[in-house]
Image (tube, rainbow, N blue to C red):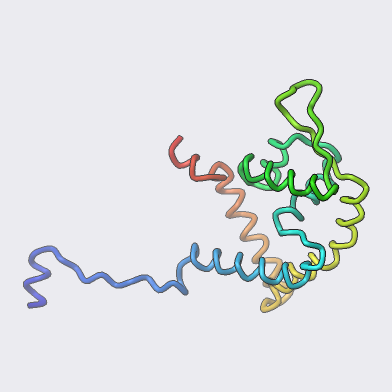
Length: 164
């Protein structure tokens, strides 16, 4: 019977274990990091995405929503929604750009700057906890390898890039 299947060109499918799939492991690692971030930063009522936006604005000072979306590698619609939620909490100011009325310029408010200062230690703790199972040398190597993968795939920020 086995030989008959081989003759007809059939091969036995061996499933690829989830524990060996990079995509699965990356998704699990993200889930773990989000959980650790919530444990460490829950009292601030800020998501990792919102923390990224606050951090990007702290570096840039003022930026339009499209630039911020590119900074954090997220689509503009999701970025705009997160910025609206931050603005509703008076953490971010979104003003119409006088040079382009369709665009919004964003900046941290004093409350946003203060919150970012308060959350920083907790957020760093969550990031350290994410990599806690690695030695210092392994952490540095892991970060370097992730940076190389991201840099090597810079044109693949969204599924839309697959169809261009």
